[in-house]
Length: 366
Ligand code: COI
Image: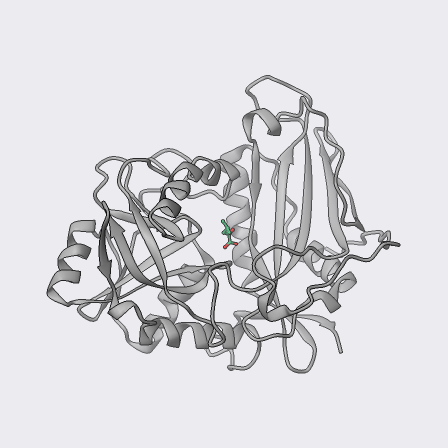
């Protein structure tokens, strides 16, 4: 279906990053944003592009009390010829459907997410950064803004998309990669079976901040969550999925428990490794097995994968105050190869060797 979204252009353009190579993650936002409303009986209506600005929200809106919301994370990239590219946006659309279903948020019509993203990017296309290791981060989100204190799904929602020129989530050097320290969280949990772990909703992250605060005390950038039932098996990292290379095998937590966020980068890593003939398993992996492998030298690499994190190698796991150094704290060769191929493909520098992952928007900038 073809959508037409009216555009109200800003009269007050925003400050641009002075240096794209040090602009960090989501510190700048573009000039415009997308907004669309949902009313029970009417469905989704009035999609529009307006200047990025604070929004009015009634203080009794249900999202502010009961957190009925969802979000997605995508990126747009600038190819050398100026074409703006997306990466596997169909996967974001599919995950959004699953999250909406779990959060009782009305489904968006097929294709609307990508059309809205394209329409917004076409207005702010010159915000897609050029510097190496950068991208335009795309944050679609939906929240219930019905005025209601009933613990029931809202009857009114807003769907919005905002854009941010961005560097890597975990600070990087000029080769694009840098190792981080991660704190293994064995007290608090992120998600239990039957909960919302597989869905991209704010509550999963809000509930994790107590653990992130603790990680910072240990000089760590983020937490590695363990499973809720036994506090034994590795699950995911605060912002991203986690991969462990032990004795030649690359291992990541399986999606079957419903507690793991099905990352699009996670899926891409598994498919790329399979194509390269690297053994990869989606299986339960205990933190004891990881510590044992660290001691006997078979722990080769650990890395995080995510839209924001891209591929982020982990140089040290901090377990109950003891450091387990990985690959001498250096960037591992597999993480580097994955990063180079993934980011290379996303920016059009490496051919789309997986076939159909790179999505040309038809939008061009100088
Ligand atoms: C993303 O990678 O897009 C995310 O949503 C992670 C976020 C918590 C930074």
